[in-house]
Length: 423
Ligand code: AMP
Image (tube, rainbow, N blue to C red):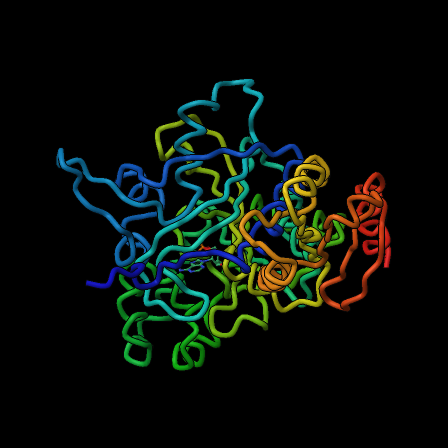
């Protein structure tokens, strides 16, 4: 029997993994510079965390969650998203009054049993950030700016931010009721999914992407028309904050998020480069979630970026991403090899990617291997070079060769790196 990976779940290896590392490193830099600490939570949690946190009737929980009974019958679930786990961990370890940790980020796999297609997988990865205990609208704006900053640092063009406010516990029910009254007479014209959504989740009907539903809901009431005074002030504040952070946005009153816990601010980053699955990130404010999951009354706001989609945008952007210079050491004979080893180790510590030929017996075999490994430069040292204290450096792309003293080899590569980053 041939064993393969599960449908919708993928291995990520070379050469693509280099892009993943680049993206992950950039996100860490952006978030850590803004006082965020990484928080790693298990991929398995109690199922109740998600049914209570995300809402029993959300599509993610109802149709897509990998949930099962453990050997002791306890109900467990593979996390379908990151926020509920971070909130659970926050309550467990950090939520004490006056605690010093209020800003967290995470990256890792999430699991949803969706129909796999380009940009939509059953195991996918997210980079997310959450801020607790700040009610200020500038916190929402800062968080949105940080997601945008990650795109900027990665040189990704054309990602557009859409913003909305979903209201709060006091004004949303009024909007929901009005929306329902508007939608009920149109029920027969909606898609099958939306006919079901009418029962549990009418808000989702207005952001359904199917033509029939878009047409039917053209004149639907907007959440923004029902915002209470506090929600209006908050929404205004978020917009002022976005201007202060120089983050362009458009308001989309039809954008609602798929999970129940969002209140007030909701946002999505969309890209025209991604095809049908065009959302690269999403997030919003969740002021009651900590309390609903058994913690104190502490509010929160967060975002999650889809890593697969982000990586695919980076791979098509005219980019800044440079993998480290790959240097292959071709030392012929024991003496040459021993002379070269300490130099190799220094170069590795300096951040170069360095490999030596131990098995190949001839220069020809070594150069063939260097070629196969996609090396940028090969350092060739045989008996003659050893006597003269030099190495022949061969540029594997141009074929150009030059002699460099063994004593200055490290400086030579450091210098060439400098000139290549300046060019
Ligand atoms: P959500 O938690 O649904 O708001 O998702 C946040 C981001 O994660 C989305 O904007 C996507 O970029 C990504 N994402 C969500 N679901 C999937 C999936 N099944 N496959 C790949 N990426 C996904």
